[in-house]
Length: 96
Image 1 (cartoon, helix red, strand yellow):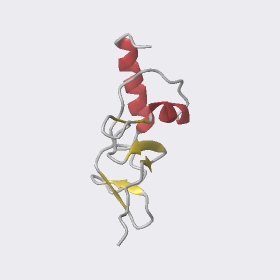
Image 2 (tube, helix red, strand yellow; image 1 turned 180 degrees about the vertical axis):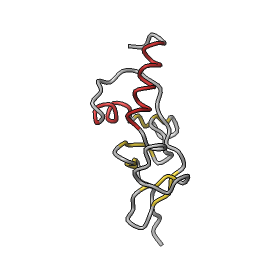
Image 3 (cartoon, one colour; image 1 turned 120 degrees about the vertical axis):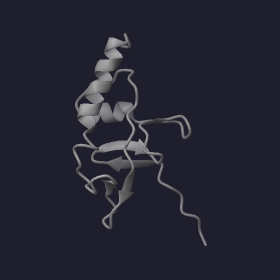
Image 4 (cartoon, helix red, strand yellow; image 1 turned 30 degrees about the vertical axis):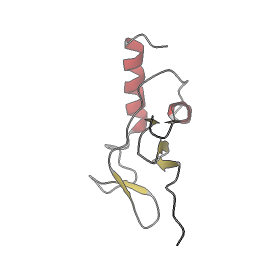
């Protein structure tokens, strides 16, 4: 029986994360901040990575939040708002 490897990246509501649901992961040497920033219309700055809340895949293969069961959950998957907050914190901390 062949082993099924986990995908290197997962896309959840238009943002990419590693298979551990992290935007920046030292375990698998993944950094999706630049691609996510670009997708949501931002220039890249050195900011803290965002983590995805616990998720499961539905029958169609889309990831849904465990808390609300929605693939388009704005409470859990409001990436633009979370990235905006992380960028503001980075600017306050003096990162550019």
